[in-house]
Length: 94
Image (cartoon, rainbow, N blue to C red):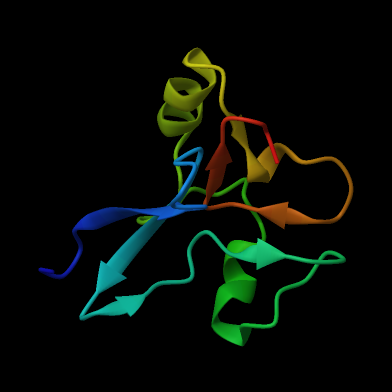
């Protein structure tokens, strides 16, 4: 895949009701939309993306979130509490 191109990776492939939005650069999944547990991430390079108030290239945008919400899907970045999954969208909201 060419650098900077987005790719949607289906989770729960048999059901097709989960999408993880990822950006690949040089065949490496980037860290702009990390999974966050207890307010932090294991990937040190992703820590600068925990502050979601400043949008940077590769981060899931409000337009993407609105598009999924318009079809009834939930976003992992909107989960309550300190666990977030910023690349995660699902039909069930989980």
